[in-house]
Length: 256
Ligand code: NI
Image (cartoon, rainbow, N blue to C red):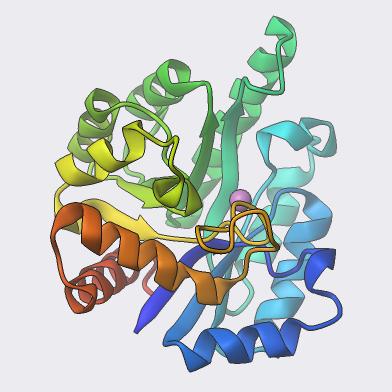
């Protein structure tokens, strides 16, 4: 059994064939799928989705590229969403300096990130973090504001050194399509250095389809291609990867 620990099935790319996508996932052993919101609207959509399909779980939050969606009432609304069945996390939240070059807006990203970390702590929920080209500030915020919280740096793109700091916090790294890309020199090094109890697998569907589906719409069934590559790079069997990544997903998200 596999768990796709990060995906966006509420996305309009799945509007036409969501049930078929889920059936394909189940047919290759992907039995649980965790979907993450990036806006208040997509978070609300995920609350509905997890009610309507078995095996689906969700996280709710405001993504750093969507900070204009966040206001003084957002945390209260997210707390209401989080009380719903099968909502198991706050996310995806974090920092994105790749698309945001303005220093004042980066500071706003940091404030909103910290506010949602506080919310997760109040709600006793784990956190899914997006960090793009903001490794130093993300790590600093987790070290200073992340106490009594657990979570994952999803689609991990940092260095081995930063990963080791993340593991010291008892956090996880999420691995997806880029592990299978030819130009992803750093990611294989990171997964080789990672203890097996710190690794989650994910798709980030509909984005970042792994080889051999690169460039197409991604879907949860393809998490098996990520698992195969992880096994190859680390010298594990596919069965071992399935076993420890599922145990890790259960450990973090309590989706037994
Ligand atoms: Ni995502």
